Image (cartoon, rainbow, N blue to C red; front, side, top):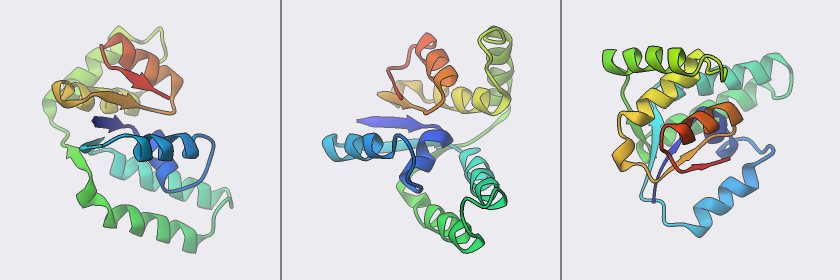
Length: 143
């Protein structure tokens, strides 16, 4: 199985929170051949980590450990590069789904997933709006 994960789901692999166990079970119970991530996930992941640190939910040491672990795992992922075509697609997705509430970074995530849609068997996100829109775009989805 080849999956695409947005940052909200990816982070659950590194920090225990609601949904972590379900995600771990998905990996245990399925042969995952590839995990696709949008290139922007590198930035979003760091942003989430430092926000948790700023809110004093984790220590600065924990933050650095999370970031280092993710960086060491880069080779396990297939990062989908951002380019002008995906940015244009993200803009059109926002125009198409503005009533649904598609946000900027989620539109980039979805555009990058769409750029390799034929290779993706499952789109995973913890964001209900993004998941709904990914379903509209023809992805099999999982929260």
